[in-house]
Length: 223
Ligand code: CA
Image (cartoon, rainbow, N blue to C red; front, side, top):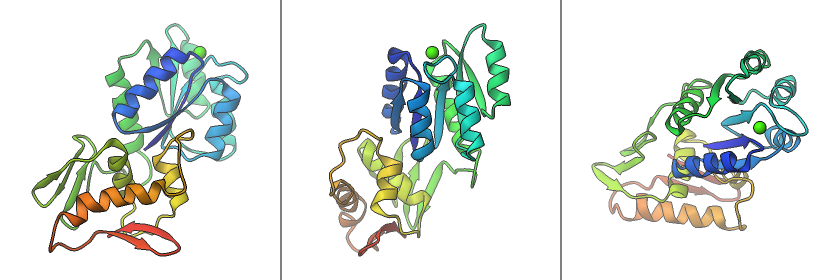
């Protein structure tokens, strides 16, 4: 899952970024409205967290402009206490939810999970491919009854593959959905991580079918 945080208070933006990364989200941060709009309209995100009072372009205008461009990424507006009008404006501008600052981090996570669950194919929290299961709430991954320990990035990659099981995913699709914008990505980063996953979910289970496949010249898939 990839999240964009648009917030000019660096301290808040960075603490949201850090906290979400702990939960295995890939997070980009923008500190002004214009840059936020550039990222939101060119990159793919699962959720956008948007402050209202921002330099260069405020959150309500940003939200309006995105919806005007037919970009329907779920948006969670952050608004300071006493800015109730902004809240109403934000929702009128096409935001999906709002949270009043200061907020508890657990509340933010709960709202984000609700927003990412809501759209498209009503995202499931337990994913399954053959005897491989992944639980996005407990971060548990198992093959049969054997638990598999994954790093946060490996988990993010496996979740993306499993949500798209059977589909061939290109390297670009994978990097755009699993890594954040400023991540140091080398040409072979995806291959390297696919290699880690293979080792953990396929190679150590001798006699079981291989689940991670390379489709030469196209990309990767799990099935
Ligand atoms: Ca602000």
